[in-house]
Image (cartoon, rainbow, N blue to C red; front, side, top):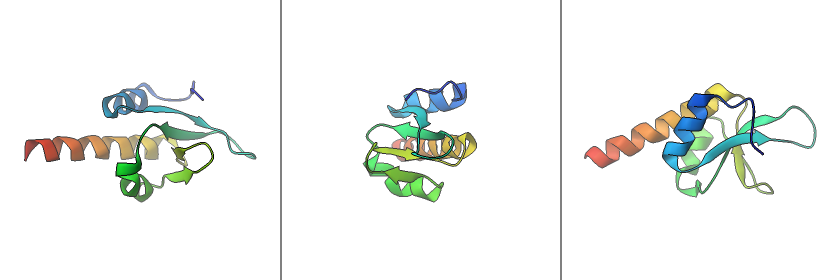
Length: 85
């Protein structure tokens, strides 16, 4: 679901990658920041930044927005590096 807690930076980075950010609601606990979209090609990188896959909702969720933003920034840097070589 869309998040009012998502930072502008997270939304901008996600849009550049062709995905979206929002809140993932676990059955118990507080909402977690999540990335929604077709991300199977970058699953390893998302996991390296602490992303956890939810099979039911088909999202990667993170402990906090800073980790989610760091993962998105890293993916964009990888994309820029691979396109310049």
